[in-house]
Amino acid sequence: MRAHNSDPFAMHIELDYGRQGLTVELPDDHVVHTLSHHSVDPLTDPGTAVRQVLEAPTGTPSLQELARHRQSACILICDITRPVPNAIILPLLLASLESAGIPREKILILVATGAHRGNTPDEIRELVGHEVAQQYRIENHDCHQLKAHTYLGESPRGVPIWIDSRYLEADLKITTGLIEPHFMAGFSGGRKVICPGIAALETIKVWHGPSILEDPRADTGILEGNPVHEENTWIAQKAGCDFIVNAIIDSARQPLCFVAGDMLAAFQEGVQFVRSLVFDTVAEPVDIVVTSGAGYPLDTTFYQSVKGMCSALPIVKEGGTVIVAASMSEGIGSEPFQSLFQEHATIDQFVDWLLQEEHFVMDQWQLEKMAAICRKAKVKVVTDGLSAEVIESLFVESAPSVEAAVVEALATYGPQATIAVNPRGPYVVGQLAGT
Image (cartoon, rainbow, N blue to C red; front, top):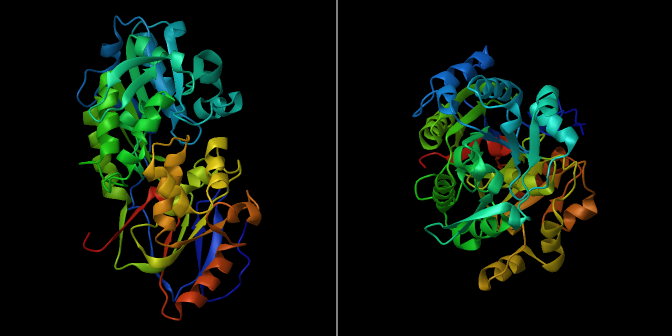
């Protein structure tokens, strides 16, 4: 999908969209701010940076020292929806384990799918690289197989803790991932690859239930008092984690920083680095927000693209318009997620259903978060992946292009209408001045 406008006074902006990006033309006299990361040069030698944090981690002995005399290891990796630089991390991590004496056949790489589908062999090769895929045992987590999990009691808020037994049985427990803004947990990374990454659905449905998600602190960039963060941190500590390796990347997926070591201390170190990069300020709420689903691999479904919609929540006016561009190359999302649109006539009806009684449909949490933006603003979706008819059935409006959606919105709000643009969607956190 490409912009086709030719207005010489338009501003050209590249939105993260699919694998190729999407160039759009916007009227520069209405655009008051384009949100962006604060500039940091990517690492010139990311391999050396990984080696350094493995040898001198935060809050733990070196990985090789931790691995010495251990008999087996389980390494958690994110699924295909997260662009973790595994090709840089895993070879060095695996070599360290083997040099410490853990046999290759006793190392399991477990894909922490959470409630997502399992990754295909081709996706696994894309995730870890051809050599690692060929030489190591790699398996998917499946949240639906309760018998494959071990019960560890309840969390402080009464979440039943069921964690993948393969991880719990490993002598050395290692997690990897990305630290980036997350619209429920505050930030991804650290503890999140354990819960929900390798938790059973019985855990996820309570942890992602309304009693936790309706808390206003369950939001982007918030850790203190955030029940999503507090619960999955407690659950991850209960499950155990000997060592983490987390990456921070830029808009071109280039590594900016690696942190490693203690699950809490290294995660907090990474969060502080991310905080310095991802917040951008808009002077006052705007009429129109143009944003994205963050491009491949995050925008492959409507489900994942909800994160892009929600990125506009802090900066759009009540009654404003959010225009989100996302490829949605794999469709809407899971069948249970699709059923929520079929069984409720409106988003308000869905919220009433969700809050009045104890109900559970897998992936309902995504629609619950989407409700917040849909009840504040009009949401228009631009995509090649789904037809206009399908989009219109998902409680949002369809638009043939970003430009067309902007023209329509400007006609609604008048000549003084203001636009903010967030090309990276959920990867940049918009905030208002003074907040």
